[in-house]
Amino acid sequence: MNWNLILNFTRQDLVDRHSASVLGAAWTFILPLINILIFTLIFSRLMGMRLHGLGQDLGAYGYSIFLVSGLLAWNCFSATLSRITQVFHEKAHLIGKVRLSLWSLPVYVLLSESVLYLIANAFFFGFLLIIDFDFAATILWWLPIFIVMQLLAYALGLVCAVLSVFLRDIKEVVGVVMQIWFWLTPIVYVPDILPESALKLLMLNPFFHIANAYRDTLLTGHAPDLLALAMLGLGAVAIALSAIWVGRRLERDIRDFL
Image 1 (cartoon, rainbow, N blue to C red):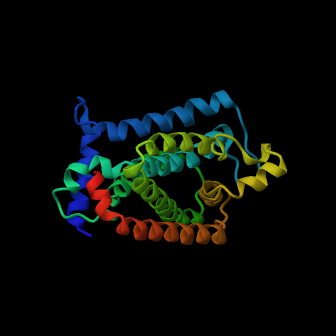
Image 2: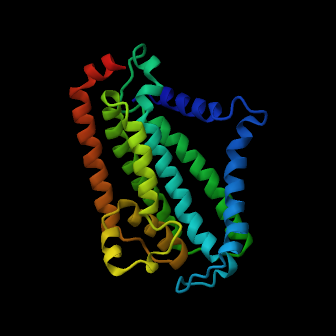
């Protein structure tokens, strides 16, 4: 893996996002801040929702904290997966000229989206400090949870990236699937409102366990479900290795199609 090239791609990706705008890179900070303010200051007031049994009195911002902790994670996961799906097409002009590993290429997307996630969470945590939120030591679990989440996004994105070379409709399919997946995950709603039969089905949703892990460690001070995280991590590794194995066998065709 050529780390200098990957880091250069990452830097350029962050710069190119708003390169044509007047404020430029400042939008990288402005957009997450606006989203956090909307969810924490406005949306919670409109919803007027209270969450109970979470280990501390969250007051008027209970629903916002519940929502943002899951939503920021979903946005990062969804963007990473969707962008990796198209990474071969986006870098097609380089793949044919530079001797570049197709399987390490998506790493720059992982790093770029991770930077944006860290920025958004910096604003979120800043808000939590302002309202005197009581952080538990279990917040340290967010790092391994994040690693599992991004590993899963990389694995699934890589599968879609290989498929998209031969089936151009994969981009649209992924977009539809991600929208449906979002609403099948309790991000904007509390799982308790669902019937028991639906809750059992939610156990098959990988991101349900990821969202729960973030919220359990932040809101209740409990450790995440380590068995679920371990299974997701191992499953992601298996999917990624399988995609790389298949991709290597098709690498000549992939480069030719691009």
